[in-house]
Length: 191
Ligand SMILES: [Zn+2]
Picture (cartoon, rainbow, N blue to C red):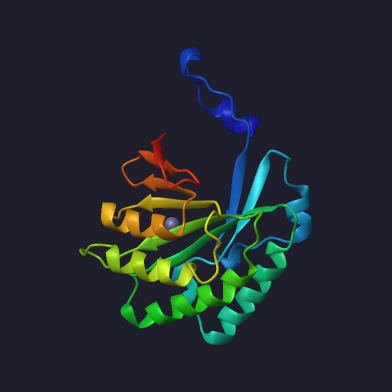
């Protein structure tokens, strides 16, 4: 980390202090051993998931990936369940498999995990259909006040309101960079 920080010179007035980071494993090919995770510096948190784009694997491969994911998720160092969701920019023939994969993973979500959502709509279309389908799946497994990080949100106010009726504690990270935090009372504050 120090090497990285020293690699680029930064003006004194622009310096900030980095207090930690997160190491994310959402491709089963990159999953690490428990020992590797144990050896990470204390300021690095860890998240694990299976990205929806991997739903194109065979059923056997998905089941094996879910089993490895489940074992890794049980490690006490896991603070995030990420990235999981739906990706409708992928060919339509994989969409049902993405839902099936979510149905296999979400039962293992625990209160200690921040749920990090990836959701993409069809290319060139509005994303409402993907977000509303995803909400339909999530509400079967996720408690109302579970902390959720919804990254690169591209939906509209209608989609946001439907989600807030069901799930209240959401950090909406918009693609344009402005982040909106929805508190447990459903109110929103920009940050
Ligand atoms: Zn993503």
